[in-house]
Length: 581
Image (tube, rainbow, N blue to C red; front, side, top):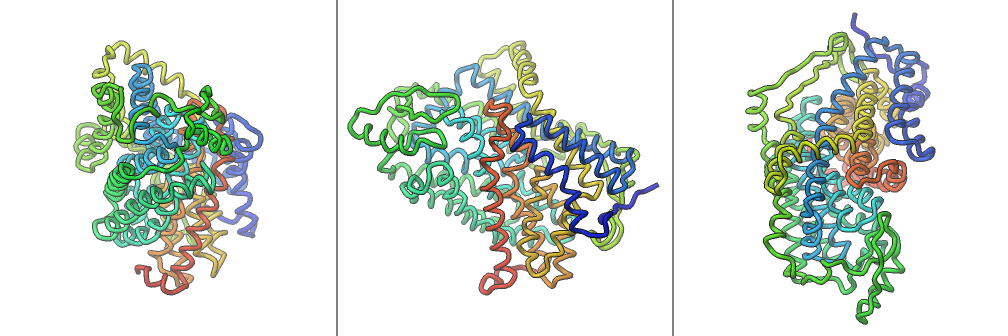
């Protein structure tokens, strides 16, 4: 017998929402303050969510268990599958020695850590977000930064901050497509509206990124390069989203941004070269810069946790154009696995490729006892709607499979034997075991939250904010991504609610549906699966709480700024002229 979701068991939506938030609060407190390992924090939050859903909101235990199972499966495939295979490729390049050469070649473009962040964390990461999404950009950029000497906290936290503005158009526009599906709004109209919100932040985020790393003075010193990076990303982002659609927004914008930044660095370099790879040591950076100017820069040991100033590594003796003693053939070979990865991920992201591979083999499993057994009811939806629960196991078409294929091909070209590849793969599985457990538990929590209606209860509390709804509706999107780890999932969860509430308040449904996605991107840096991906890529296991504490302020501050922009677009000319209907 189907079960109707019940959103207000206490007769007070505020009190009900506070209780619904207990599982999320449990995880955040365990991670950030009690310093519980991430996998135990996620499992604890999942158990609390199960108890709240069953004993407070009346969800049948069997249905709750099946919702959790579907979340666990969805966590392992495709998210865990991506993490496992990208770390496999990374480890192959480390064992082979090509990753070290790659680091030096990147440094050949610029020695300055701030410019490296712009190139790798923002522009290169945005390309992978556009092509693949689902944790791929953080895994790749964090691994690259840790290899360049950035401290684990810097590599993790800064990769998460950088991976914000591109998220709404990630995975070839998947979040926008999903938003259109659940709201019934035109996909091109939504794409255009989101493209009238996020470009402001595509200019802001690179400044914010460098400020978070190097402070105000360190940011001001390279403002021309930051401006070039942001504007060259924001303009194509606006144009493609408004005049083409959501599919290639990030890919095109990232390629343009990388080309413009590299070209700009050929004619401009900062007066002071920042070589400190940590999130502190700014005073030391000044001392080192002065010493370098005199030719007496002290040598310092590189440490795994960063903080000491480094003398320039071998890359620092390269010319800005990249001409170095390093054999150019070796440099090309070091880039080869990552170029293969780029091509494979892009090909796997094409809908035609997915259709072909799914035609070869795919399977869908309706979860008996859950599929269409949970009914969303008003006011979350206009009419009662049974929730589907189908696990789509298209293994061949998953992005992680494309990454695995790229890793195997790259490994063979790097000289690994098939047996060596198998051994390294087994070692990688063991290395990321806790990360996979965490991701599975987190998605179990997200799906249980969705099917139990806990998310809708929190959403309804936001919807009661009246004239302030443009701000709080945007924060609802932020909350959705923080809970689920996916802008796509947040749009599916709250897109319909945003449309209904906007119509009731006399706001543009397109504006508020888009705000859900635009606000959601700022929640990407604090969701547990992204933090676990970052800690795994940097081999900084057990420090997920440190990463969360570092990025939390940046996440909420940027989300509020998006909310303020949406508020201006809702009420204040000339911003209202930007709104589509």
